[in-house]
Every structure is written in C-alpha cells, then in structure tokens.
Length: 374
Ligand SMILES: C[S@@+](CC[C@H](N)C(=O)[O-])C[C@H]1O[C@@H](n2cnc3c(N)ncnc32)[C@H](O)[C@@H]1O
Image 1 (tube, rainbow, N blue to C red):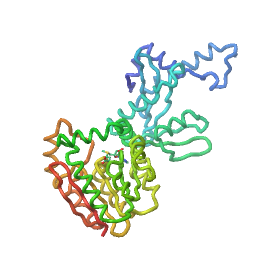
Image 2: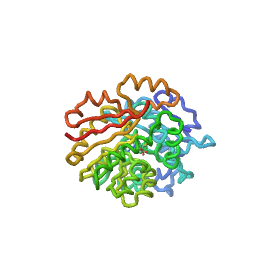
Image 3: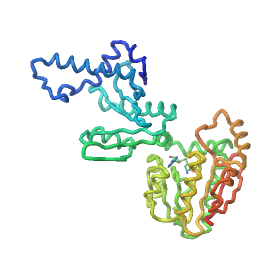
Image 4: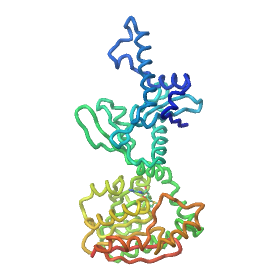
C-alpha cells in the first residue's frame, strides 16, 4: 500500500511512522559517516545520525523543491520501502529508494516504483530522472532492469531518465501478452469496440503487402506477431518493434528468424539504418497523441524505399464527430488514453505534402490507411 507524505503533513507524522521510516534507512549509516561500530561513543553517534535524519525529514515539509516522500507498507502495515521525489530545475528526480534490510528480494522496491510512476502520471509528470553513484551496483542494476536509460555519465555518477508513460504501457502489455490474442478474438466475435473487424484489417494489410514480392516489412508495435506472421511464413523480411519484451517473446516463437527491437517507436528508429517497402501500424499508433503520430509518420518517410507505403489499421473514423459518437456508444469500455486515427486530422496535416493518402472504412469502428511515399 502506498502512502505519500507531503508538505505540512510531514510535521504531523506519528512517532511510530518516523521510527519505521528511519528503520528502513538505518543500514550502514555509521560506517557511511566514517565511524566504527566499535567506537566507544557509538550510542551517541547513532543517536546523532537519527536526529539528523529526522531533522532532514522535517525540513522537507518546508522545501519547495520537495515533491513527496513515497512510503510502501506491506500486508502487516509495516513500512518496507521508501523513496522521495524532488523537483529540480523543472525536472522530477527519484532519490533515496531503499528497501528495509529484512525485506530484500521481495519485490517491494519494484512495487513502490510502479506506484510512484502511476501517481506521477496522474499528476501529468511524464519523465523521471535519477542520479546514481557508479559504484552502487545494486541501484545501477535496478535502474537498468526497469528501463531507465542512461543520458549522462562521468567517473562518479550516472544520470538516468525514464519515460513514465512508456514504462506503464510496457508493464500493461507485458501482463496482457499471454491473453492478448484471446482478448482480440473475443472482442472481434462480439463485434464491438475495439477489435471489431480485426481479421478484416489483418487480411487487408496482408493483401496490400502480398502484391509486392520479397518486400521488407517493418511492424511498429508488432505485439504477438498476429499480423506479420503470415507474411513471414510467405518469406517476407520482417522487422518487429515493440516496447513489451513479453509480446516480442511470443512473436519470436512464430517468427524465429525475424529481427526484433524491444524499444518505443522513436528509440527503435535510432537503431534502424535500413529502409522498408512497408511500415505497418496495426492497433498501435493510437498509443501516441495526434501530434506525435503526425511527427512519427513524417519521420518514417526517411525509412521508406521509393514507392514505400505506411499502412495503419486501427479503430478509426472519417471525422472527429463520428469518433465522439463511438466514444459515447462504448463509453463503458472506452480507453481515454488512446488517440484513434481520424482521417480528417491526417488530411489537415503536413502528411499530405509527402504522402498520397487513401482510406477505407471497414466497419463502424475500424479503418485502414495507406500512405504512399510521393
Ligand atoms: C494493441 S497491441 C497491437 C499488436 C499487433 N500489432 C496486433 O495488431 O495485434 C499494441 C502493441 O503496441 C505496442 N506499443 C504501444 N506503444 C508503443 C510504443 N510507444 N512503442 C513501441 N511499441 C508500442 C504494445 O506493447 C503492444 O504490443
């Protein structure tokens, strides 16, 4: 369970909360300060350290740059992990992430991190930074394992950043990976948002591509490989990008020799140097907002061979109004965090300067776009 200590609330914390909070941090503090446990006045040293820590905690209540102490309690309501988020020069930093020494390897730090990320996202904070001492191998590994990317390093420190939205989305898709295909089938069978028409979209994408022999195909948001697997079996050269390694694990079972990149769309492009005949987004581009969709589609022009085509199959409508009507109709299950393609938005963008655009509405909820390089 997550608890957040902020501002004046810190001054009203009960003694046992402060005791438990300090107990999490109270590990190796004597040695860190250059003292020995054999020092004759060890009790006084320990008591001074504790006093310093508590003074620091109290001072956070007045610090404008202090965003909050995040405290994780286990089922017994004991504080088992803590961290703080501080605000510096417009950026948010993760600091002091610690697990109680008796509770290592129980996943509490990971649980705390996820809850902090969800909380930050609720506050519309999209990026989290963290600075780690290079010799702190445990913390370095923790950051790498959780998808933080190194943005700066020197002999002493490494600075990491984490795209909060992508991290949360990756976790969702990792969890969904094994049941994803069944969810699609179910939604399609019921003929409802979001996957009504999925098979029709799938086969129209395959049909468009299979007119070109030996094409190179890049699928952005490849998922379990449902769309590209038939093409792979026909001998097409497939590259799949996805931020969920669990999704890619499944896609790999069906496309053993295909190339895969586990990364978000933009990061993946930095790792791609070749060009493609087709770039496919099947139910994936809607994870970007409209502005980012257009920027990405513009950028992808450089990754297309002459006459290359971008195909988008997704929940889609001609007009904004129709999308709003769909949203009302399916309000109980509508995902507010997705930005489904709308023909009008693309038509009014710079995309039409560099692409010849065609569109087919498959049914009430789905459509397929073809952007041919001009
Ligand atoms: C709904 S699934 C679609 C999978 C597959 N294309 C299909 O049609 O079945 C969306 C996929 O896009 C991936 N995804 C979402 N946002 C992404 C991003 N920003 N970068 C890379 N992959 C992303 C997800 O991990 C997920 O596997």
